[in-house]
Amino acid sequence: MFTSMSSLEQQLYFTLGGKNQRVFTLQDIIDILNISPQHARNLASKMIKKQVAERVKPGLFVRIPESIILDKQLYKEDAVLIAAKSFDKAFLSHYTALSFYGLAERYTTQIYVTIPQHQRNILYHEITIKFIHVIPHRFFGITTMEYSNEKIPISDQERTILDIVNKPKYAGGWTESITCLQNLEQINWNNLLSHIKRFENKVLARRIGYILDNLENISFPEKIKNEIKKYSGNNIYYFDSTRKGVLKQEWNIVVPRTITEAFHA
Image (cartoon, rainbow, N blue to C red; front, side, top):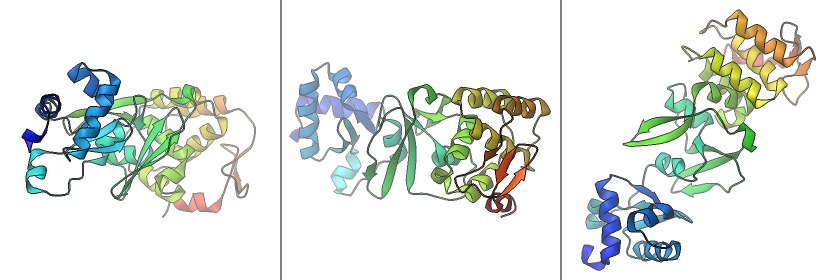
């Protein structure tokens, strides 16, 4: 197998192997071999033809391990690593982040990635990597986690709370989102408040306040509660686009019955 690779291809292949780096980018090739972008693209194309690498999307590749090649098996890389390296500015989010924090309720074949630009989803074998676009000033609340010998970018817990309340469809819908939040044990309240204000969405702030106020698994500090109320103002808001429900006066928000029932699902 290895005699079929050129010296540069072998250098890249074994350097990646020595670093236990299973997912690599065009820039990684350029940096490791000190070659031009065009040369790197050509080299990657040849390695794909030789079946020692797999192309996921332009500029993103999977290194096929030696054992797989020798045994001629089908190799599937961990899609989380692919998602984490899909773009320079990107972080795992929504239901994927809930899973990392031990809050999710089920396995899903979708991996959610937040990025500050529009991007087509990636289908990698049976896994869909779904990209969620946010405007640049809402690209914040990111931390890193150790995963499979690499550091991957992921939304911090408070940003994850904000994200699934903002777009519950990326966390299984309202019932599942609230069920996941009922698994929370602690919250960095100052961090959450900072994220809410920075996101600049008063309806979202009111939703978050109402939901957290109705969770029995956490104690909602009065100071933070009052700060969220002060920030979101005195207007009456609807919880969702149905514009139906009962007015919850403490939060000045009209809440559908399906949401109130979700707390007891």
